[in-house]
Length: 66
Image 1 (cartoon, one colour):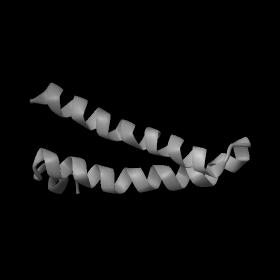
Image 2 (cartoon, one colour):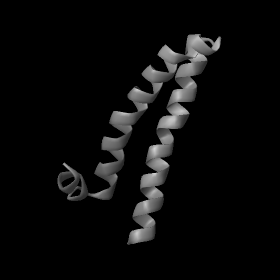
Image 3 (tube, one colour):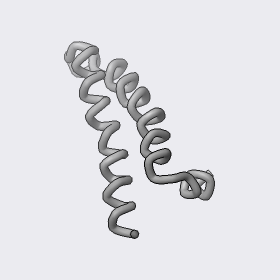
Image 4 (cartoon, one colour):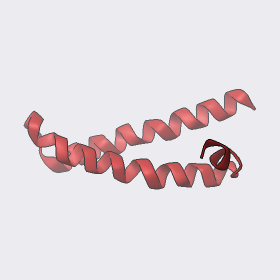
């Protein structure tokens, strides 16, 4: 799986990561937020922010290794 991902162009890698981690982050934040007495929508927004860290770290890693 890792080799398949690395064989894609950089722009395609970003789209794949965004398509996977943005919905996952939103859903996780939306579901976990009520346990912290936070509105689910705010939890979803926080999950989107956390999910975008994966994209940021991938961009950082790619630019440092090229």
